[in-house]
Length: 420
Image 1 (cartoon, rainbow, N blue to C red):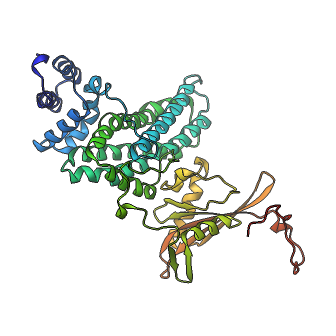
Image 2: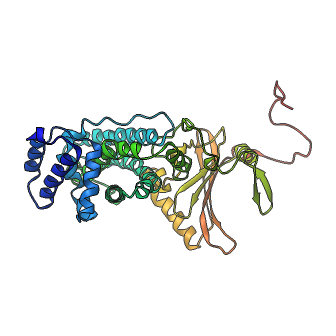
Image 3: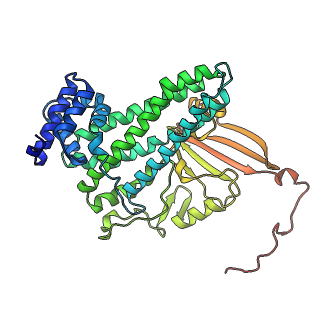
């Protein structure tokens, strides 16, 4: 019969009929066998249009979402033939794919740790190993930035093309992944001690399903969503997405290349603030370049977390005490700290938001240096909480100051080359 299915719509009709059987309760294995028997070929666009048409024909998006993973397994033989899209570095799709590589690398690391549990006796203490799992799960929570760029920057173009259904289904699956990761991490945060038998059970029923969900979404994106999007969007569409991506941040990967469409850039799509334009403030103004280098010159490190607990900025000093990567931008601050200190972070934020406190200070010995770490609540004129500013400073020399210095005396030797 397969020779009779010689055009795209017939292939889609065949898939729709079989997927409807899934929705009516027919066994997955039976539908999969029928599909592979009846259909010699199908590609990502067939699968995408199949979902569009099913939704248009009355199957609720929620129902498709419930069986989305089953659809993917049934159609896997055909989807496996679809190659991951290739684009040049800096293109939004290239960034999405590189982030997926880092996500699957992280899930693989977690699976290796889970494998080590099998080597432990049932009553052996497994908390240290599970803390490593929790730390890697914290890194996986970075997927929220990947999903928000996809949902808020890419999906609107499907809506403009009157194709909102499949992205709506995928958005629902994104939320399931977020919730699975969140609940998995919260479960580990509540555990002080856990033996190997309990840890294996927790991983089997909680951690591994969360990892599966992350990996399944990577598959759906690369086999269906991204190829469809590349055919649907123009270069200028992609450039609009590119310009707005920084606002949401990146997931475990930061693009190092500037990307410009082959056909050039329309004037109205260029970056809104040129380096020579001035930023007006209540007590003066800066050129953008001036502001960047003023912040770079500060003798301490700054990090700003907004009122939603999202990291929005860090100063680019050359001698930072704690290393920062642009990958943390857009990330929840709780997932930027080791599991053992998250409760302290949450306490500070809670006290700042409630108005009970405005400052929290710590000082530690780090590699022979005395380091001051201070957190300040940032509020507007009405006292409303806007976020938290972290200031980190090496105070080793400041603690040694004595007496006065009133005469000009440089701390550093003169530089050999002087720039006028």
